[in-house]
Image 1 (tube, protein in one colour):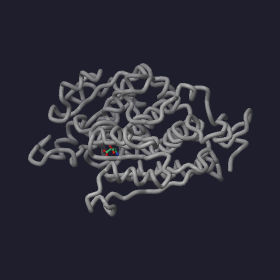
Image 2: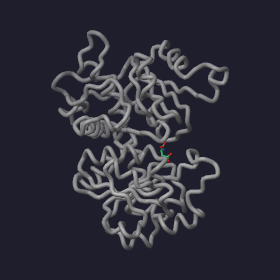
Image 3: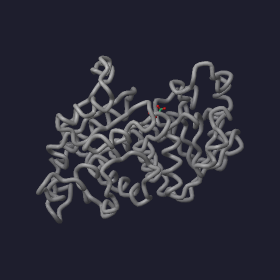
Image 4: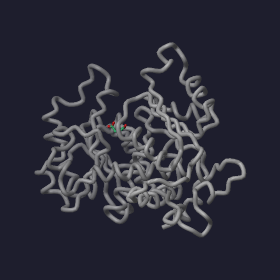
Length: 341
Ligand code: ASP
């Protein structure tokens, strides 16, 4: 196994801001690198020196469980120094601006800023004001690129391909950054995307992104190879706007239940980005059942985030005089297998 597959040559970017602007080759470079890094996590010593001396800061202005912890762990597995910034206890409450906050953190030597913010475009704004690489870890309802990449990796591993599959994104599409990033990513790889949910959460205009729009899950379910059950984004829904009459009706019309599994393809793959709400988007029997790859997504997310950190700061932007292979902790011609630390 080689730490840096040939396809990484397709990667020349300093930032990862969204899937929309990436080529299929660039997405494939991340997925192939993630495949290489997955093996490291199965070792007893789960660490390589690829990003030794680099500093990765997590700047999360919105809550997170999986994304923040897996970026931290990914940085540690690559031997980077990592630091979490907590918006709630920071000087933002004293009036310091978002850009000034980021500049101060950069002044501590940050090479990579992993940014989550409720405002769409916030990571793009920082990319114009700081020298560090910026990774978008979710900007409002806009994009969540590493989530889409880990979803692709999970599909590719479970199904052996992405091209030609029909993937249903079910639930709150209107307010979901996961939906947008997934639509862009799946389209690039030749999957057919059906977005499905109540008309209040799945506007017809989504067709413009290159997907089919459906409002009746039972009509499209038999065609689906993958269902990605998306959470209702209550935090992004304006007070007073009621997208459906009740949770039990939502489950009745759009929830993935055992009854629906019986009419679906036997090998239907169940995904959910988390957090999952059991009994709303899917029932416990489905979430924990044999078709579910929800925890595989979490495992694959770690590998994807290692790959992204490596491609942005380890390989393509080495410190002066550092050779690529040296930065990765591998001697030319040898593999990561031989150079585990
Ligand atoms: N964790 C994902 C996100 O941050 C999905 C969700 O919150 O529903 O967008």
